[in-house]
Image (cartoon, rainbow, N blue to C red; front, side):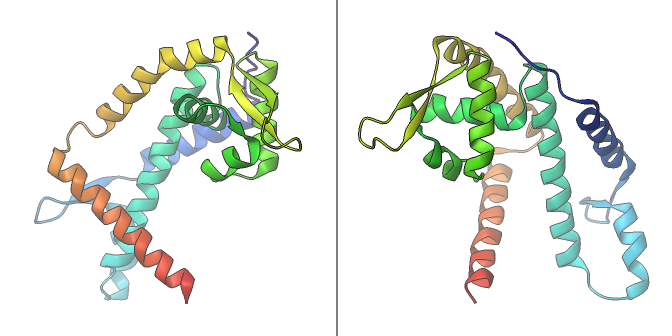
Length: 192
């Protein structure tokens, strides 16, 4: 199996992103809740309630942090975040058309084609004809791809447990609920 290293620009960007994350100092308010000190300093002169903006900024910050963790974890296995996403999706759903894979991973067909090209070159995925549609091609894990993703699957689950380790089961249910409420509200806004 051939694994390509990532180019210098990508590595530099990741180090820059990590240092950005480290530059945000957190504090605790009177109720013991975390906040970003820099955010409060920037917006306190406005003398307005910035609770909504602060909460959504924290959500974006959390998303960026989680994405960096996922990228770093994927790199330890010689993969990019996109490639590991394809492998996990094929592990869970079996072989599938590239267009469906793009939809499931919220990616463009062109991007998925590139990811599958690399995974195919590395011997982890193969393209097979779609038995129900002659115009379509499906992606399938090879034995080597399945062995790799099986090895790292449990490790991935453990990484997720570590990230949420300080949260109770109720906290996690509330986090899920609040995030999905935001999704519902965004859908309403987009539908206007």
